[in-house]
Structures are given as C-alpha cells and as structure tokens.
Image (cartoon, rainbow, N blue to C red):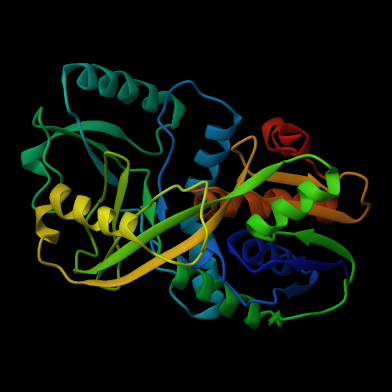
Length: 344
C-alpha cells in the first residue's frame, strides 16, 4: 500500500489527502494549527471562472476543475455526511457601457466553444434578475452558469469528515512517512523561497465579511472587483481586499468596513442586513500567479502543492487528482505554467 504524509490541512492538503485515500493509499495528514486554520478558513467561497477568451493552460485547467466540482463534492458529502455548501448557482455582473456590451457579446461567443457546451456566458436584461442583482447602467447583465459557490469552512469540515470515514484524521505533529506533500500555504512559500535561495511567492492578506441575509438559491454577484456570495446557511459573504503589506495577518480594519459599505451600495437588499462575521487571513500567491505543483527541486520524495491564490477552492478538485496521478502512478499531467520552475 502506498504511503504518504500530507503537511498542511488547507483546501489543497485536505483535497489531495482525500483523493489519495479514495484511491487506497495510506495517508497521514499533519497541521499544527488544525484544518482550515489559514486562508482556507475564510468566508467567501466564490468558484468563479476566468473570462472565456485568450485561452491558456491555466484557464483550461480551471474549467476542468469547475466542471469536476459537483461530483467531487457529492462524493465528499456522501462519504462523511457533512454538507460542503456547494451549489452551481451562477453569477451576475453589470455591464456599464456600450464597449462593455460588445465585449460581453464577444465573450459569449467564445464561451460556446471554449466551455464546450457545458455552461453559458450570456447577456440578460437586468429586469430578469430580480431583487438580488446589481444595478446596471446599460440595463444588461452578464449571466454565466459555470460559477458555483461553497462555504469554505463547511467545505473544510466536510473533507475532514470524509477523511475520517477512511481512517484519516488531522494530527498536530507526526514524523514523515512515505512521500511528503507540502501544502503549507503562504508560510510554505516563504520556506520554499528560503530553501531555493530565491523568492517563489509571497503572502497576500485579504479581508472579508458576512451578512445575515437568506438568499440560498440566488446567483452570486461580481461588481467592481467585489464578490457577493449568497450561501445555503442564510448568510451572504463579501470580499475581498488584497494587501501586500500588513502587520497583523488576522486583524480586520477600515478596509473591511469599506467592503461592507460598497456591498450595501452595490446590492440595496443588503442595506439593513446585519454584519455577523468578519475575517482576515493571508493567501499564498506564487510568482507565476498559478498554483505550484510537482516535485520539490533537489529534495527527493518531497512534493509541493501551493499557491492557490484566490482560486484554490475552484482548482482543488483537479489539483487533487493531478497530484494523485503523479504520486501513485508517476503520470505527470501538470501544466508547464504550474511547475515549480515557472516561479523560479
């Protein structure tokens, strides 16, 4: 029986451990801070695609992963009995001017081919969208049916429950056993940079918040860089900031207040909704801006799965299967732009 140690119980570490265990491997999962203690323990959970144009390996990989997500999370839920809060509810975006209308129409045509008929990117009248929708100066919205949502904390808990059903529990400490997969977030990028003698990535702080407002079946909103995500548990999450410089990784401040104010303006139904949670954390961003996957250079038996900046939850299903293919069978399908060398 193949044996592995996964270090880091964020979304990449949990997902890789789950797929390895599904395939019959013996897995130990180690994180001194517990599951979802870093950026995977946030609030937003927007599984949103890149725009369907200027196609590349990263966009194709993400598309595959988003299309895999429904089955992936259904299997997790069935194994452990915990609901990750996944639903493919789509997304709305306002179109502000005539140039935006032309671009949205071009992307709609692109989606027909690039998304392989599995989802739509289309224009709709704002009057079709109901109350949970942003105002649009042109009277039109982009509606894509590929975007999904999940609640990050519920998803982490669901993976923990699924792993427990396979006899795998998160340990605070344990010696290495078998090959080692390092999925240790922004601190791991810092340690990898030190080990390689050059910067391969950094931590970017983000802040978010959640309102008490029930719209579990509504599409999420993306407006002026702000994600507004209705969850199944009667909350609406908003986020997030991107801060390269910070003193306290876990504190919220006036930037979070600004997110809340912007969300109330963008979506008037939230005007009087109470804020029930605020979150801050640091997300791992590789120099390449893509996930970093593959063997740790000059460290035999050690592997990296890191750098899921903003797209970690959306990428996780395929990341987990690609890493399992590599670890269990030596089948390497990692895109060139995701390899460690791409960030060196």
